[in-house]
Length: 192
Image (cartoon, rainbow, N blue to C red; front, side, top):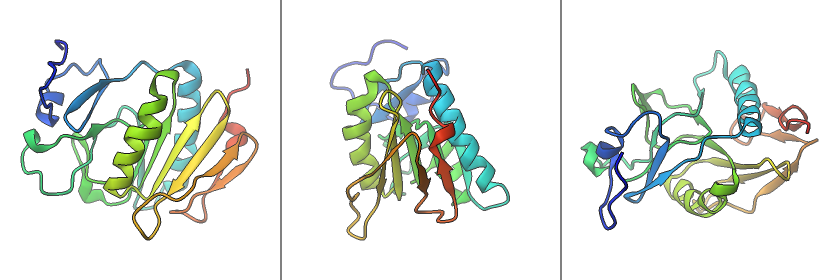
């Protein structure tokens, strides 16, 4: 893909023309390139996905690992050109099957997990945090491989994320949207 033009607003229509070999996201019409994940990132993401996918077997929800396209739409975007928020979270949980199509998720997922890399810290903690909160993602996890920490944000009744619950590598997380699911972090972070 040619370098993005300054001042141009990109949309999902543009996203569909880009090479599948390059991971990109669009936030408010601005494209962001995603770095290739490290082996540690892949192990963490894979283990979290395994725990969620095992729990969700036979349930109406599904866990989708990256790359998986999420169009954060409000429902009034009628054309691909109207969609200006396209993200590829590391793990996406969707319980409303009507939001799933052949291209990914069109609407707000129920839970999103982002595994941070050094180049994505601000993007995950600020930009995506604000977009996921505004879109109404019920639960948002930020996983920090270096510190072996997981910050869990839960949408409150005022449609804002409360203070995060912070978990370390030897703790267990009770998932707020699935109260009978306990994620064991002792198997998530690889030993160095």
